[in-house]
Length: 59
Picture 1 (cartoon, rainbow, N blue to C red):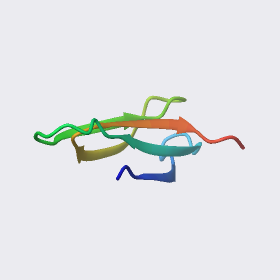
Picture 2: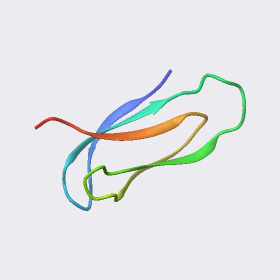
Picture 3: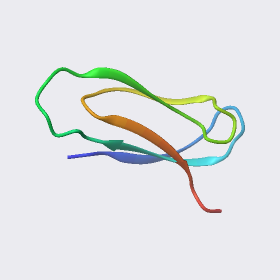
Picture 4: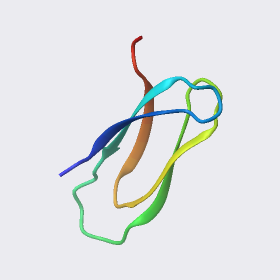
């Protein structure tokens, strides 16, 4: 089951939603990163067999 959560960028303070998009295929997990779309600061890093995205929450 994919996960998602809200956080603030430590660099610029914008509110973000971090989401996992699972690939639903068997195999190993890799360390994936997500970056703030406003300032390109690393905001999430997780081991997953899918992908991680960060998007700005409407204010």
